[in-house]
Image 1 (cartoon, rainbow, N blue to C red):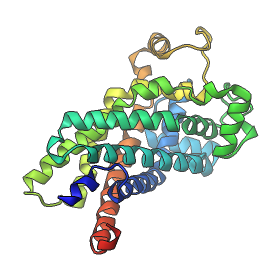
Image 2: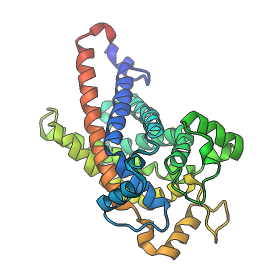
Image 3: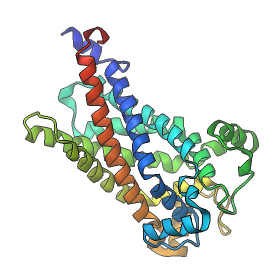
Amino acid sequence: MGGSGHNRNIFTYDTLVHAISGAAGSVVAMAAFYPLDTVRSRLQLEEGRQSKNILTIIRELVAKEGQYTLYRGIVPVLQSLCASNFVYFYTFHGLKQLRSRKNQTAGSDLLIASIAGVINVIITTPLWVVNTRLKMRGVGLTSERNNNEYTTLCDGLVHIWKYEGLRQLWAGMMPSLMLVANPAIQFMTYESIKRRVIASLNGAQPPTWMFFAMGAIAKTISTSITYPLQLVQTKLRHGDKYPDLPPDAGILQILFYILKKQGVSGLYKGMEAKLLQTVLTTALMFLTYEKIARFVFQILSHQPLLR
């Protein structure tokens, strides 16, 4: 019985292993599919860019701007993703350990994933604001303001704070908080499918490809539901301004503006690239995360002193 008190603590080896595995998994996955993320942000931010198929856009970008453009801003993105997923996985698994195993249902997973998401958004939004700016630098979009003054994440944070104020570092935080629904739905779906699969296998661990498939299904469902908010979030982070809207236009104003100007398809512009990128990235992330976590837990189980 002595172990259960230990398990009810947020600060455990287990939680740390989950956090490091989640962070490492996300970095591996994003590095593998980064060009798709570039296509997604270009489609979301460039009003005139046509939604063609993804390979055509990748070819166009390479022909016009060189291969480097596909990996523009990758270092700060990987740094932010690592920090973001560490916070998310740590909070999610830490809170999960505070609840007993018996009470783990889809509803409790959704609640825990939402709380983890809110904490993550509040801590990491400034990193993503700088990221969006660095990624679109040199693309010639009108809302680039003294963007060339910084090249790293730290410089960007200080620069925006100094010249645009603290508030701008948390630009797009409201849609981000609403978008907590995305990973929350994703984690709830993933954990639910995983519980059922493990139950159907009489408690045995599923084969590797199944983790990939479960991650892909979970992400497809969550992204399809929340995509228009992701579009607005990217535009707010980038600091886009609309001629007919006040500079501090809110989420709903921007959503209706896009709907009026471009119709429903405008709200889903870039979704093909987003779905392909996030589904593949998330599936690979869950796969890597499960593999690393299982590997580390096996090592720990052979070293009782660490426990």
